[in-house]
Length: 162
Length: 145
Length: 165
Length: 142
Picture 1 (cartoon, one colour):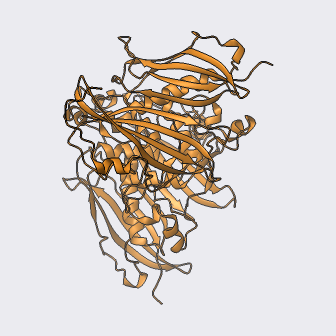
Picture 2 (cartoon, one colour; picture 1 turned 90 degrees about the horizontal axis):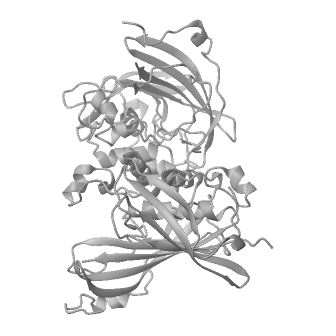
Picture 3 (tube, rainbow over the protein chains, first blue to last red; picture 1 turned 45 degrees about the vertical axis):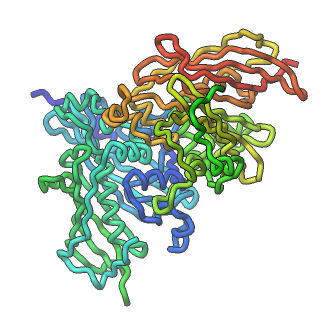
């Protein structure tokens, strides 16, 4: 069986090369909608006064939610909402028969609360081929736009099927 | 709102309070709304990719299960704890309207850099007991002292 | 109007006509403005891009037609969205409900709804009518909802019609 | 986006049509955008359980399409004053929905130039499924 993808030196040369930054926003409505989407009833995700009484700036983003990428139909993917931009793995000529999520890992350095604007940059970290599946891992870093502090890092693996 | 867990009370091998979620189509559509992922794989049973995979019903978003694992970790950490890291891999698919158990167990506790660190194995489990979304988490907990 | 059937409008219902329900709060933010515009298929950048909206003379991203903000959702409290605010205090014998229509009136001379706004919404039943159509006797309920922004300016009104039969 | 002026408009003028065709994804996007998660718009079994032939397009989405129709026509200096429709027929996913409008009246009041339109959505059989009206204020060339 022919390889569906070859990890060439050209591919490896893209490891660690950051794509252009993108802004992600966590707002009261977006946090509530996500919390509702996962079925949580914890008031920390819904009630601003309650969250403040517990010492948070505002309602807290549930784990797994790092804000919504700013959307424009010309620049974002219509299905997934993420920015279609160069870099961060987008220059790979990957198979397109199927696309699955392989894994998600988030390292938190701070809470994400409503009102936060985050600047995300991502880069290709790893590409592996197993049978007809190509495992592509990207690393994303999210900085608070105001303080410049890194608040989260993610490793995201997608599986591209050929 | 869960009771605050303290480092002093945690033991290796301790199981986290588990819960079960059985997402229906409306739940997955709400998750699409919250996450911004509108892949029809998760709500349109006629979506061609499903047929190609030989599946007759919609698949639960991997990220939905990740967020469920996030819920059990967040509830364990409490508002005074800090979730430092949590990750999963997606090893098996779960179909819509099937029960998904969300579980966790303490694997290690240690003091590191002045923090009370607890390590966890966390996962989702299908009706056959298969771990469809295994992962790990690292949490810093307050101590009573 | 020829109604041979007995009226389903009671004194209790007549008494609530014109009475405002409890106010609810709607939040207008950039993410929900974008999500709404995306879900309609708008292409105008004033609905997505802060700079484009400002260049066009607006304070921030503009709420596209039909978007008036998102009710504050809390699973631990009973819902208080505009749909729930009125019409729960009485019962009528008809089982089926149709949405008869929606009309929005805007007041751009007061202000235009933009991201960052907090809207207070107040609803009331404007009136009941009875008629008989091809689907039999029906009750038509007219609702009026007023949207006021954080500066106390009325920015929109909605006129809704519900048909029960 | 080009600007239409009051002087360019005459009664009977048909404005550029907006064509829509809702995928199931579009209906779920609308659920997210509007917060209306009623299952008759994305859960076929649920819809049929209520006696419908299958999934139907949200009335409020057609209303918003008509809002887009008017917005795109009136240009950046136009002001949308009023738009509404009633729901007279169902539309289904993966079928064309033609959003159309025609100018019915133009007049000047308190120094503002108003244009009234009949607006509607039309199904493939030519039936007006969401007839309504809109009022916009347009700039003058002078």
